[in-house]
Image (cartoon, rainbow, N blue to C red; front, top):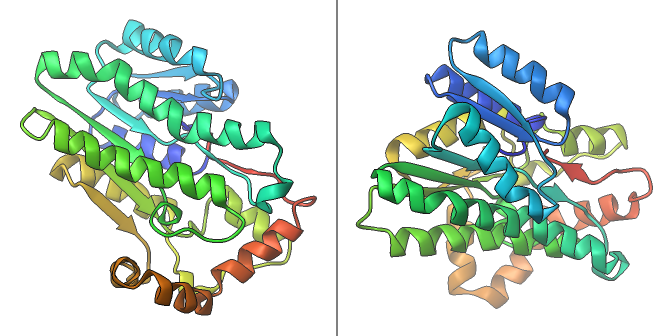
Length: 271
């Protein structure tokens, strides 16, 4: 379980433990991970803290090796670690762009590449990618984030196609605006609120959907209070028209305000 030291990741880890899953929790904050692992052990499962900064791709192998050394073979991988840095595209430094690509897309791809052969050999396994509604429809001031989250959606589709006859499953979970995650709180503290037409969800609901995706081998799960699939489908049929419709929801205006507040808002970090 990556990105487990806060927000969605912590709640998913608890949901997995409630299902009797032994969990290795990974993230950058070792003290938080240690406390979480202790909490999970109190739920009757084995748990281990495996601190790592997955923005450093050289740590991929270390995370897998340490996890297997403590808990044994990895049967379930939940790729949740990620970062969102809302800003005008040209204001982002090149290293900020590549950092988002490394953590949001390259790291989960490499982790999956690392654990998949053993899953196939054992004849069991499941990989979950935590993407976002931003990976289904791009909004302004979030270009690298949208691109990486869209990459996770397509990565899942391709893996399911290639391994359709195998015993290993792949799912992508796409939350909308998570009302009790870190980014929401930072925006609220800055005196802003996301348009209600964008919908809302919670970390608990996202965690429940992750468990459902694993149990049902679901290809894609959108987690949002507002039905959005119809809008997304319409966008595929009429891309020019949807460009005129989507601004009505207020997403672009909202993210423009967040971008203007960049000096007051730290990047949203799901680790």
